[in-house]
Length: 351
Image (tube, rainbow, N blue to C red; front, side, top):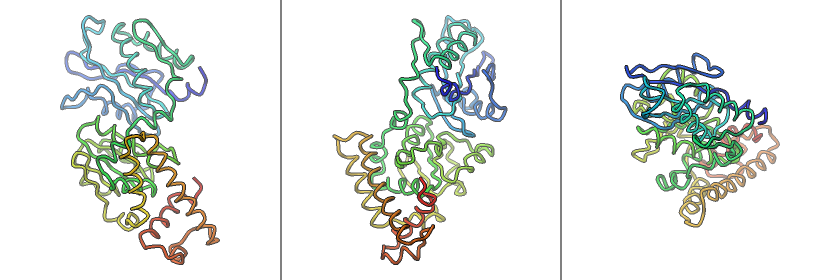
């Protein structure tokens, strides 16, 4: 396998819950930091007070992606003192389907042998050759999982189906690099929804803004605050009271999007937003258009807006586009605001 893939995958570890109800981090190769280890223990469903079994979850902390697959021990097995265990993979890339497939194989290997040795051998084979396979535990080829497929795995049509023209609020917040917080009590629904949102700004192809599974702890909140704009998912309803964390709040079960008071000026909606909203809805409601085609339609509209913005900046002859300069073009106030804040968000159009 290439050195690049070895650099992308960072570690593999095991968390076990024994017959006494104790949950422990029992093994890791090569290592994770103590801080990240505590975050991963918190994300693992085996440590939660209210037992909710989650087969697979993923998230992002300190520029590291984590993927956790949890299994219940089935008899007969060498793990006779263990009731459940989680395989934890950390990596530099966003690709849930890839790591879910790999971790399922590692789970079956660990279940059979009850030792991390065979599992580590499979992991190292993937690092060095990009493949691991066996008749009993299945096969895995890294080349089957490219990053663009991972980016397009979610359904933008489902988002538009739920929020309709209000999807443009999410689009605008992403374009302006605002802070979006999404709440849903069910982690599976939260992961499915949040992973789609960066695709609304496809021209950036930036999933580093995504933090799909965050707890209200100081260490995790400090981590997301390092990002000027983000998409962050929470299962704790208390987050709705944390207005310091968001510019846009999405209550997913209720289907309600709220813009914070401090972001209302930059997020004011005008004719341009209406045009974009209508394009999104029309494209998404077309049964013959796929999710990727809907994203392409929106991306083309975005390119048009950015091209227009670049021309305006050039015509002003300034390094920065000012509201005063925009007023000379006689745009409606909401459009002026949007273009002005967009110019700042795109860092002088160097995107």
